[in-house]
Image (cartoon, rainbow, N blue to C red; front, side, top):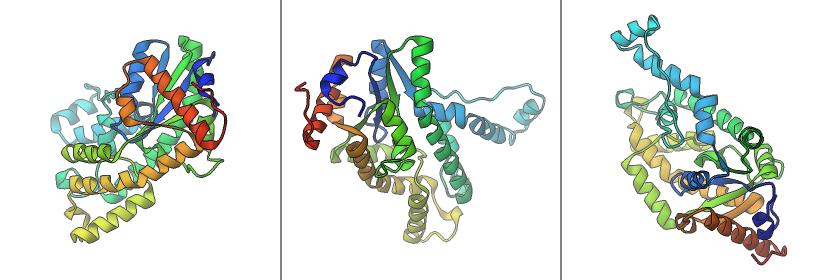
Length: 299
């Protein structure tokens, strides 16, 4: 790791650089915003980068495709009288989620499964590219804006686009060479709350192709759906989400074990400011050192 001990982290003269990962809803964006507000920290959102740099044109084209179905908007678009664009922000990623979509009955907003898989593959490529852009943004933040500290707010699906058990994984190797990877680890109570929250407002997500195709086959078999149009899109992604949490947990754990440190979501929720965050990470680094038999700093 780039900070062998908690003392190294505290004394980092060139600034502190971290990547937060874990399930959406456990505090990655909140902590990133808190650090940005403290001053001196550049906040790099992977999902924002995906939705602007890599999938922005696809998202806007999808809006236009829907607008062309409305006669008035069709006429205005064809005459270049209106401009349609995505207004994605760090706190509102709805345009990206809407583009990813949900498979199933088109009458209930569903996509054909083949089209859903195509968009999932686009997201995979975009997420890998956005993650590999991180070193560039570290340097850009320092060179242009003078930021010496950097927080990368990764998407919940980071564990789906890397192999945490491969010591030569190109994405994780690149990230670990430039940042400290920090897993925000949820408890079973957090998992139950995330499922309840998702059940109230199901959102599109990215899944590994093999996992997704298996989930689709199992769901259709379990519900007796003989055709795509018989699948309720929201019901399918609710059913799949609980499976995804169980699928991702060991992958996150493997990422933390080989590539970084872990902190409890409860501890993250209790953070009141930058100083608390620095203390929390220092303790996590030294806890890892103790667990692996390396000397810690006593921080």
